[in-house]
Image 1 (cartoon, rainbow, N blue to C red):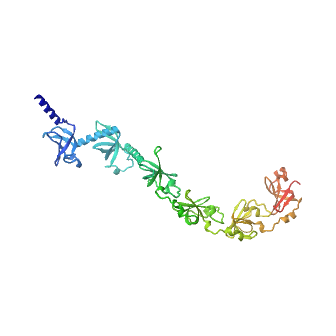
Image 2 (image 1 turned 45 degrees about the vertical axis):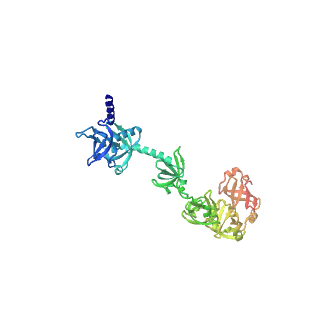
Image 3 (image 1 turned 30 degrees about the horizontal axis):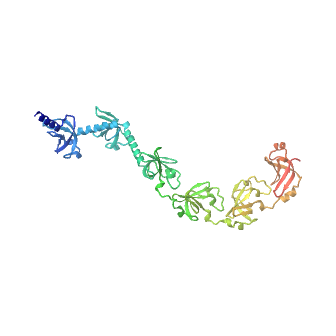
Length: 513
């Protein structure tokens, strides 16, 4: 009999759970009334909870929820329960766990107070100091009643209070996003990004936690002078991942790769010999670059600009934006180069130069420019020839062509030679006058003693004036050093004729008389 009572007592004890005040228990919603909810907690009497403590989604017959035991039995014999306290305690336990693990917690900013903000985190009120808020410069309307993730900076178990940090949470979010992004990034992937910085060599793009470099050479198929021509700070762009280096955290991006390469069918578009039109987009010392279409530029070398004109300054002939016609000379798809010519569209006047200007012909021309060794003369408004410095005067020593001629001066010249293949015409100015040297040889026979005027003193000799327009040379071997050291231009000196070269148009003199 005693054994039977013991067994029954055991079964009874197992059927009844020991519940204490302030415990957390699981209960099932048994009935929903206008102001309260009856909860079956497995005891002889039911528990009761104010309906205001439930969320709409929790009010469902048969749903099991967690409750806090307020008192074991009130005057009516009913257990008083609290859903709100259960939620708060559950939230607090979650907060304690997250605080230990260093995880992030969701919260809603509910109020701005002195020194910071208050946030509701699963029913627990937390303080967010301004110094940890990361909300500097953010309007209140974008903060209040908004959901954020926070890191628990400090926890007070006794008062059940917490201090939050949005700054640390945002940093961790960025780290998590960066890690996720590195896993998702693949070469060839198209990504959206924000231009973070612009430099002379490219732009840095924020892909959402990972920065990539968009180099200037990968921005456009056509040449650009600066990245700011295509992207703006803070602008949103779509880019292609060209290369990845996770160890050094480097990402290479491309913008032009999102468009088809205009050079892919270049040979079909611009075959050799084709006549094309384009816009001058750049000028360099050796030629002009002409844009034929977006991303396609060709070079007109300075030697392909004109058959006849000597191009000394491209700026005098062209301006950026000028439209020009040209002929395609070569196309190199691999090197992305197109050679163009302007002169090939014109008739080559050099083909008829030899027949049109036979040697000995007198022609009229205009002085167009100078070099140290001669002057360029445009003849017949067509071709250009050159007068060598030695063919300017029969008798005068010409140090520089500009001493005799002026730019724009009209003169008559004699054609000395024509080389149509190498596009050269040699002209003579002195040849338009009779050669005076046969008469000079008669006038100044050998051993003639003269008094002359010093014109110029050089390392190799002394130039003197025999008469107006006629100079002679005393080589250093024909004059004593002591004599030279005391001479200056304008001084008089006695000399003797020792050589008259009619072919070379020179008179040799000596001061050693």
